[in-house]
Image (cartoon, rainbow, N blue to C red):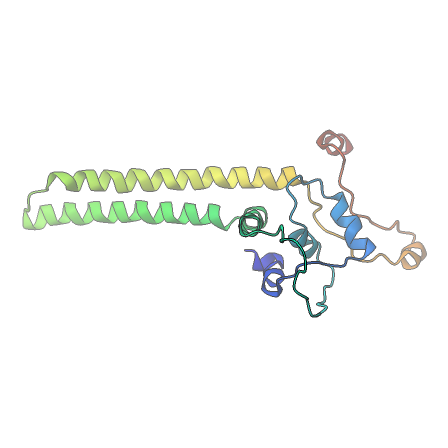
Length: 193
């Protein structure tokens, strides 16, 4: 999912800093998110990016504040902010476990009817655990989908970002230029409609 949002290449290139145009800065400043991952947000805006290669010298004084724990936090934040894959994965695993439970139940029932094998005590417990656990995990995945969508709405990112507006062409057609606007407060968005 991260790749489909255009963020996968950001982490392959491993930038340690960036230069951004005024247009990119303006778009990122309109995003009201409190937990920001600037590298991912800049990639999310969709503006053209290029790489500037330079020789980075070793640090002469002090130690870097960019610790392993901060890098892990950045990776987790990026995955949670820009991908619903964990939630979908949970749903699919739950469905697979429930299907496995139903298939195992059918196998045991057929075996009991055809070969008249006695059903051992742990078998029914195993079937019950697989079916109930799988259904619970599936329902958690469904609830996770609702929470993910609520979080997406709470981030209030614009649906699109206008890269360039040709004001002269818009004026000739008598059309007002469109700008990406994010309301300061959710009630303002409700009042506009």
